[in-house]
Length: 161
Image (cartoon, rainbow, N blue to C red):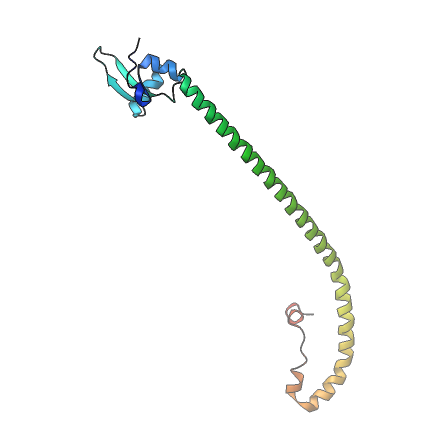
């Protein structure tokens, strides 16, 4: 049916029909591969077109089955490794979520204290405002340089408080 030459180098010389059967594809797919240059071809003395197949591609060849088994085992190992990496990443994400949740709760607790702190500051401001007329009277005699030392915080000046 075909001439099996070139087997010593790991290649097999077969017809287009036999190549299609060995690779599990159609003859049109083999012709397209020849056209694209992914398969080498040769015109035989009998007028037939022969292609050269790598034995590792030949699904009917027993050696290719062993190589395929090793390849499948290698791929299964890689899949197991990637799954373990996904598990590690999932744990990291869960830890981050817990940290974010704790920070959100702490932020909410601090935000709840802001009105208390503002109320305490307003009491301090009221006491300071009551003391200002006394301070102004004493500072007016001292001059403008003594008045520069008593200034409101920048955020009060900025927000008009």
